[in-house]
Length: 464
Ligand code: CTP
Ligand code: MG
Image (tube, rainbow, N blue to C red):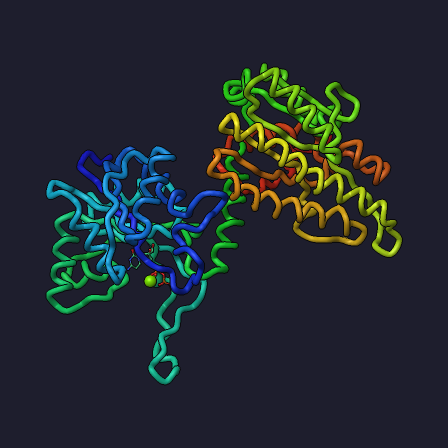
């Protein structure tokens, strides 16, 4: 419990040479949002943080104010221009704090997985120890080498840690540490704790988090994307009351809404007192997502009637299980028309309406088979992989219009489509459509776009 003035300084003035992207890595998109925004959120949420200062590059100041404004990161009071080195940027941030500041937390903008727990732990510790680093144990053996590449020492691993951020300090102590470093001609230290140690002041450590990775190389962005999906998945606990609270009176269009997962979605939403339009080729209005005219017609009827439509969920899709050698061209076209071209046509039509109303959510039901092609599934799983990339691209295109696009990828579900293709399977090994529908609806409440939610079973998920 900290009652003093605690400021978070977020360092975003690097140019990301090792990452080598078009934009510095703190601005690239992760799950639809700039990395920096993910980083800022936990500091905004943490009640013990009084204020946030962002240190950045001159060309990005306006863009940051836009991000901060659009996402109500109201604790950001200053966006200032950094220096040539991390040390310099850090000093600039520190010098921007008012003199009555009690503590500062210095954090890399490129560590977007920082959690509220770590922030709280470090704030508790800094009151007691005045200087604290966030570290994790090292799985690899660390060897020290000399200038000729020979090992000079293998330190005992049990005493080694990997340093992360945030690092937290009593304000006057870190200020003094930086001033001393400059006086001693030290200009390119990458670690604020190192400067405090030079004052012979002890630095305590708390445990960070394996997932609190730093985005440094291009590969790290792929790992971060995957981590983000896993995190999205783990926060989905099902809560009917919560759904009801969020979805009452909201308008849903469910395509493929009369059987399988779509039917279960419709049932649950009706119980939540949402306004639901389950559509198929046999409903009125009729919809066939391979036929643009029918899509336009159905959407214009519904938007005309409701004015505002919150969510369009597409469950329509098909599967033909056949090896490439024996697959007919019509079968191939059928799968691609339905699973991917139909989604394109549906999206193009929906965007017209969503842009007009100023918001909207497109959710596409994919399949866990998108991650790997298996014998017999060449058309199906490649179309589901295409669906994921299509959705990520679209999510970026429409982000600024407040339109979200995500995919859910369930494992094997007990649906008519499955029974048609696989005959009798032991139903106890399949996910129930109701379980999958519940998870899909929970995932709609996660604040993200361009993401894939993987839905896997546990005991309670299987068909009884
Ligand atoms: N940083 C900064 N000012 C600098 C250098 C770095 O604010 N002059 C910030 C970066 O924006 C990043 C953090 O310090 O959030 C950690 O630095 P690093 O991962 O090294 O980022 P870059 O310096 O941008 O990358 P590179 O070293 O590959 O150029
Ligand atoms: Mg650097």
